[in-house]
Length: 86
Image (tube, rainbow, N blue to C red; front, top):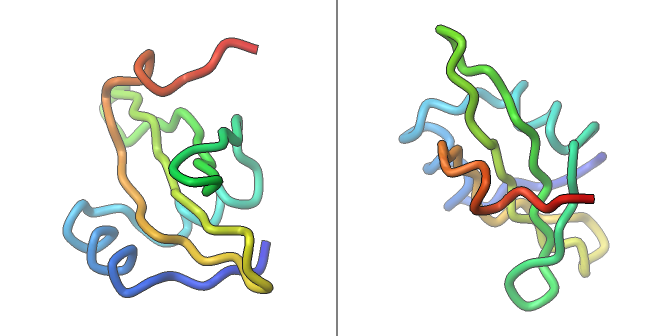
């Protein structure tokens, strides 16, 4: 996926220690895509951040524009809160 990162997303990735290759991987091959926040989409995957600890990495994307814009990126241990059964 060709996308742009908002300044907010860049700052949050740096602050939260989320490397760009992880974000790229989630956007290229998400385990789930869920409609959220005024028709924006959450691209999300469960990822091992080391030491066997899995987190849900979520990228909130506005794909209603010509070049999708990543609004924010975060990881959470509350996987069940956001994961949708298929």
